[in-house]
Image (cartoon, rainbow, N blue to C red; front, side):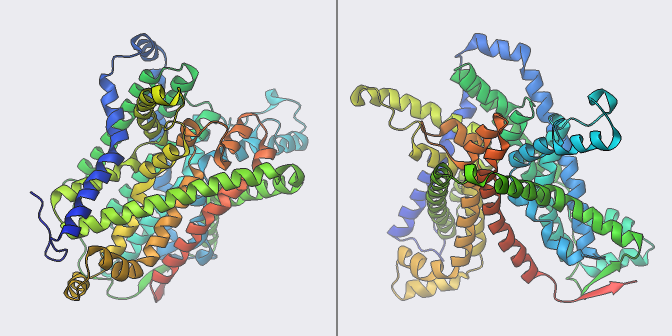
Length: 554
């Protein structure tokens, strides 16, 4: 039996809203549940046995090595840069403080295309090296292959370390200065203080940032496919479109989904008994270590490299290519694709924001464990790769279309439609908008709800006239983040886009696959620059919330 919090009331409007929350959660979770159920599907048994005996081990090993490399890379790079800009003073610290966030705006597949153009045998880097040292062929020297598992790991680390950097920096800023100075008084050097005190206290934030980075790695298709790294996502796409065997693709998607859920459970289990507390607040402004001489310049170079490699060089190369091929890049087709991407992202942002508000507000009114669980289930799509969600949507919609085809003359009304694509985006990124809206709603005291009800306002009126104006900034941020995520999304778009309907992300992928990066420069640059907007807003927000005073230690 559903019960309602006193703060939300138990009126008819509240009950309707709660049942609406349960219905939304069921609809949003259906694709994931459908994929998980595909483990017991008996279709395409021969092809499945062939996959198991030939490529399944390759998919598993490549995915595991990718996870291990990216996990270590983002942890080291993100936590080290966060510690330097938070606790040390060196040349350019304030500049790198926000420039280090910019690579978050660049999709990994765009970096893969750019660095392949720069570092391949016929690219400008190796060509210049051969001219400088009079090398005549590749037999005269060795150059690390960019199209490899190591190259894919490098691309992911460069664009995903900001997840760890942002959360680690926030954790370091919130740590008690008294705790850190107590470690110094006991003889700990800056390095030992970082390793034995600051890192354990920041472990939950570091783990959360690493988990986000690994989920994005799990979702990628463009980078690993372009570099020839066979992962589960590549296998799903190849089985679906290459062999036209949807049951086998569903089984691969199910294994990938179970692996993603296992990763989440493992992360929670690893912290089940780990508790790190700190007493009191900061006590006084944060004290910084002053790095002088080669140490200061070394720290500046260390912070500059990820920002330069993850954002500066790709943007410079894309701008150069756009300038060189402006006539062929900015054609009517480019603006047509831009409209497709903009309209899809806008509609998906509106739908995702609306559902997020309903879910968050329903949870606020009810407060029961059933509603809270339903809201969490509806948000688990962010942990599932886009290709898996596409499989989970296309399979049931295809069955419905076969039934409706008797009436419509064989036409597909649902699968392969724009509506199905928007639904896939909503399932995939609902957690992004939901988390932002929830954070905004928790800042509103329940007393405002009770005061509004005492004045005769019903549930809908309270939401529109009281809460909406107060959480307007959070709603705008949620819509903007969802908009940018949809603009960058590639795997679900490739699988589910309607016939003869392309977006900027798909066109970049197609041009790059044909080795036509010059023509892919304009759509790639558009995606990247759109992604800069929320990153800049996030940087400004962090700057405003930064500590007001600091002390510098010699």
